Image (cartoon, rainbow, N blue to C red):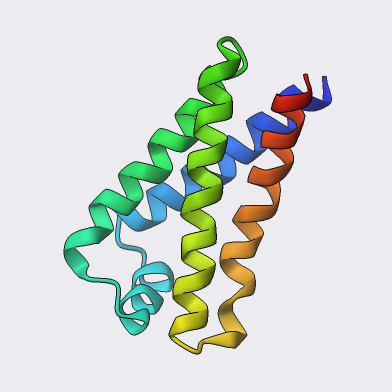
Length: 113
């Protein structure tokens, strides 16, 4: 039951992030621009998050898909942390961590289930 709750909440959280990028919410895309992330990448980043969120949910029925989605999202958000640190925006490094931590939790639960 814990796996289901954590996975569904994590998928919703990541899907919200995907939606924010895809709709170009100012509070998301302004930092992306300041970090030097090219505008052409934004739709692909949003799509990657959306696919990862969907993969986590599918993983509740096909575990290998959830594990692969979790690995992909971990890599995505580790990349986001690195991007923020390279931009020397230390005050905002917590934001990608807020996504990374639940993804790691969902992945860990999925692997041990």
